[in-house]
Length: 155
Image 1 (cartoon, one colour):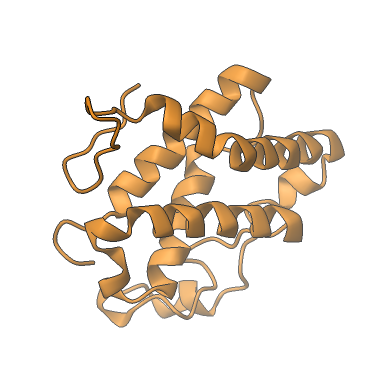
Image 2 (tube, rainbow, N blue to C red):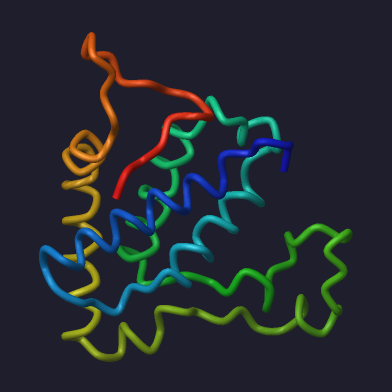
């Protein structure tokens, strides 16, 4: 990814919202590991030019969309095992890339109550994201919201 890529900021915002949602509705089976895995899938799917700091809003929307779709499909594949789209420069042994893909949601889907809670959590996270972002985004005196690489999300 390019220098000053928005991928870390995107993950920070998603983790922040996940934590806030957990404080509102309680714990769920979704973890930061799932968020990281979803972000890594997106980083392989989008060209490096799509990850500039000015693209944070769009990449964050993409991340929430990817996560929501994965939960609906009951599938989040491991980023390395069984993934033939991992770039060669990462040098993953062939045995891992040739292996059967691992669905990280499978154990959760098999436990209906856990899965149901995770579905509800993700739906609420997506629904509450604009409000929480608005609430925790610093505003400057004239009412404009600063955007760009130096604007910070406060917790």
